Length: 282
Ligand SMILES: [Mn+2]
Image 1: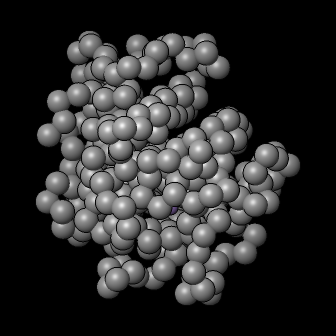
Image 2: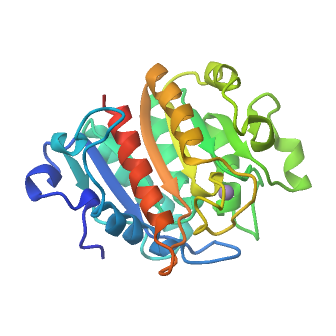
């Protein structure tokens, strides 16, 4: 059980009642395939977040003053079906209380229940995925709830847009939605693609960020680091553009695989979450 709260903020600003934002830790990694350890992601994010400056320069705000609650972690049993169900129930309850859920993983499987809860509540949503991988396998190693199948599950209940992709297998080719994928090779260092991506976001938007969308030079501590990723401000500027134009209903940040000798990845994840909360609740 985590004893930390996001931002290390005092009780007054971290209690559930008044907080418009709820961080939901899901320390789950049962289906990871290569480097394991994403179950330690939420604690590493919370620990790093307690060392952040809480004034955000770009938005000129201290968004924590409005309240950020950190919920008790769910998905602790290691069973994928129970985890997906627990996340779905928790996110539905957060939405029902008119609050904004931020799910922190854990591997990418933790997004499934959250996306289902949002689709059930809002109907026609778009899932905007930032990731090195398409994650479109119908199932992986016998599991339909694998981290490698998350976007196949998302596509059952939502429209999807995929950004930063640079790794897939031929099994996924039949499931690609052409025109809705923005490959890292085509977008790195550019912003001329923002409008085409933005036009595909219809209805309320769910943002899922697999931290391996970042280049390993800025975020090495992830389960499957892939070369050729995006830099911090590339991700930030694109999301700033999207957030200004759409209703964002939930956010998840997954696949931090902490390394005790390398803290900058943990810090990047927590700062990204805080900066996005600052933008979203503006
Ligand atoms: Mn990935």
